[in-house]
Amino acid sequence: MSYGIAPHENRCAPRYRLSIPAKMRFSCSSSFPVEVTDMSLAGFACDALTASPAGTLCWLTLPGLGALEAEVVRHDNDGIGCAFKNLLNLAVFNHYVRKYPVKNKVG
Image (cartoon, rainbow, N blue to C red; front, side, top):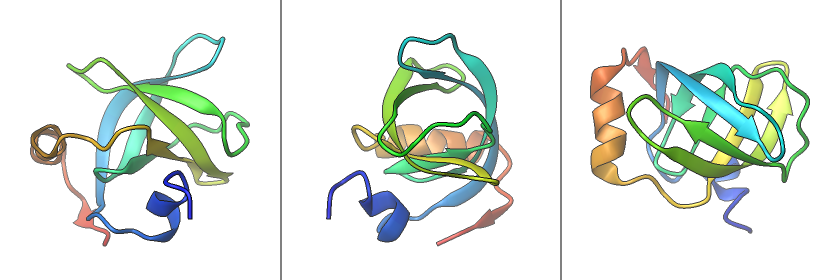
């Protein structure tokens, strides 16, 4: 199984439902606002409804952090699910879990 599929299928890292205002950008396009609604060390989901097939490269910019490269692994009526190119640093992940309202632990 490729790494890009692992966050969607394996759920090997705890995921949290959050509400983080962020910006997303696809290759060769301008950034647009999104809400990150679910995040783990390996990936995230956001409310972007822009059509983007699996495999599309994107960059997520969270408040106070530079752009993080990711790859779309799913797109449906709930938004986009992406796998980070590199796992998030645990301290960075914990910062966002603490700073933004955690609605509930997912897995």
